[in-house]
Amino acid sequence: MHFSLVFRNAFFQFISRVSTTFVGLITTLLIARHFGASGFGDFTKVTVYIGFFYLLVDFGLNAIYLKKRKKVFAELFYTRLIFSLIAFVLAILISIFLPYSESSEIGFSNFLKVGIFVFGFSIFNQGLLLSSSAIFQKRFTYQNLFISQIVGSFINLLLVIFLISNNFSLIYIFLSFVVSGFVSGLISLFLTGEKFIPKSFNIDRNLIIRSAPLGLMLIFNLLYFRADMLILSYFKTSAEVGIYGLTYRFFDFLLAIPLFLSNALYPIMLRDIKNPRKTYRIFKNYSFVFISFSLVLIAIFWFSSPLFNLIKSDFTSAIHPFRVLLLSLPLFFITSLMQWFLISFEMQKRLMFIYLFSAVLNIVLNLIFIPKEGYMAAAYITLISEFLVMISFFAILFKKNFFRMGV
Image (tube, rainbow, N blue to C red; front, top):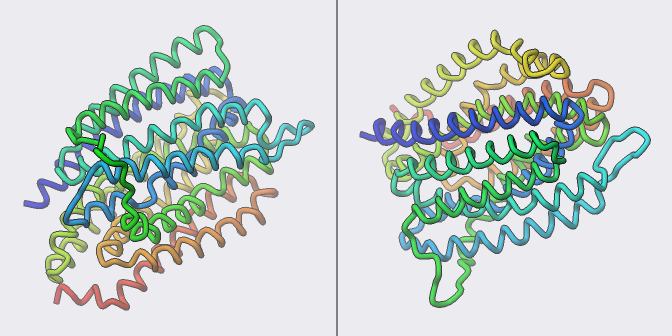
C-alpha cells in the first residue's frame, strides 16, 4: 500500500520538477546564451546568495509540524512569515558588506547588490510554497504543488523571453523570477484550502523550539553544500562562477529526485516508526531503489555531458566538474534516505553536529584549494564531503542497532 502512496506522490513531485526544470532549463539557457559565461556568473552569484536564506525560511518547520497531533495551518504560516522577514532583512544587510575588486571584477559589485535586493523578495515566495507543501505532504496531494509551480514557471519563461528580446538588464530578469514566484506561491496557498487569516495573530513558539536542531542542520547542510560557490565568487572571475553555476543547475535537478522520494516516504516512516521490522524493511527496499536509480542517472548524464557545448562555447569546460559531481550522486541518494530516517528517530541534534562538522571541513578545504584549482577543486571536495557524511550516518544507525531490526 505504502509503495503506491510513496511513488504516486514522488511521481507528482518528479513531474512537477521535470516540468518546471524543463521550462526553467529553457529559461536558464536563454539567460546563459544572452549574457554569456560572465553574465551568467553574475546571475549565479545573486541566486546562490539568496538561496542560502531560503534555508532559514525552511528551518525544518514542516517536518516538526507533521509530527504534531493538532495541526493549525495559520500558526505554521505566520511563523514562517516571520522567518521570511528575518531572512530578507539579514540578506540585504549582509550584502552591503560583500567585497568587490573593481580591477579584477571579482566579488559583488553595486549592480549585483541591487540584484540581491530585488531577488531577495523571492524569499517570501519560498515561504508561501514551503507552508503549502506541508499540507500537500500531509494529504498526499502533491499534484497541487505541480499545478502552482508549472504556472509560475511558464509565466517566468514568457517574461524572460520578453525581457531578453528587448535587451533588459539582469535586474529585470531577477524581477521576473520574483513576480512569477509570487503567483506560484499564491496559487499553492489557495489550493491548500486552509484558512490562514486567524482571529488572533499567533506564533507557534513550541514549533520553533522543536524545529531548531533540524533548522540548524539544514543551514549547516547548505553551507557545506554551496559554500564553494560563494568562495569561488570571491577568488575567481564571473566567467568561472558561470561555468560552475551552470554545472550545478543540472546537478541540482538530479539531487531533487531522492528528495521527492524521501518527502513522499516520510509520513510512512512516521506511521511505522514503532514497528522495527517494517522500518528496517522500508529502509532496505528503498535503499536498493535509490542506489539503482542513481547509477542509471550517472550512465545517462555521463555520456550526454558533452552537450554543454551546444549552449555556448563558453561552457565547454563545464563537462569536467559535472562528471565529478555525477560520481557523488549515489552518496547523495543514500544520505537523503538516511537523513529522514534519523529525523524520524528524533536525531536532529546529531544530524546538526554532523553537518556543522561537514560545513567547517568543506569551507576550510575550499579556501585552501579553490584559489589554485578553481571549480574542479570544488567538485572533488563535494564528493569527499558527502562520502564522510554517509559514513557518519551509517555509524549512527549501527550504534542504534538499526540494521538488526530486520532480524
